[in-house]
Length: 189
Ligand code: GAR
Image 1 (tube, rainbow, N blue to C red):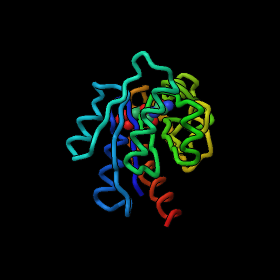
Image 2 (image 1 turned 180 degrees about the vertical axis):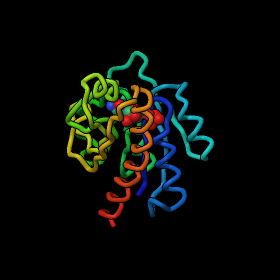
Image 3 (image 1 turned 30 degrees about the vertical axis):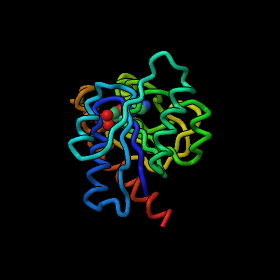
Image 4 (image 1 turned 90 degrees about the horizontal axis):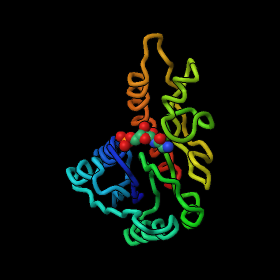
């Protein structure tokens, strides 16, 4: 399974996925390319340190559709079979979602459909929920939306701050993304 990973920032999920593929924990899979819409994304260094090819496709003055076409071309050139969004903070165009129908997955730091969008951990914290978590799902044309592949609950502890809760969710995200990709990989065999 050839994977392309889209990032915008830190890239800790990207690193977890890449390491699990390199070690064989996710079998018969390889990260073909990491693409960022931000030239300064910290995750680009993490990818290069792992010997993974990186590409920057900035939005600049282009439309969403033009930007996404270029990203799609980079992915297709490398024969990518599955696209993993890992902190890619831009809504994909309907054209892109249709072009790669059923082949795009995303991770989000809440129990979707609760708290889509930015700062999901803070949204859950401010809402006073006792349990939140993270979700890996197929991507459709709506933001943080589409069929769920796996979810993991994370309890809010009495002395949690947004920061401690966010960190515990992130730790679970890494394991959840790996588990979801193992599941998808076993289904294509
Ligand atoms: C992660 O918490 C991910 O779930 C979230 O951005 C963070 C990226 O961290 N994504 C979203 O909120 C998508 N709506 P990372 O760059 O270290 O993987």
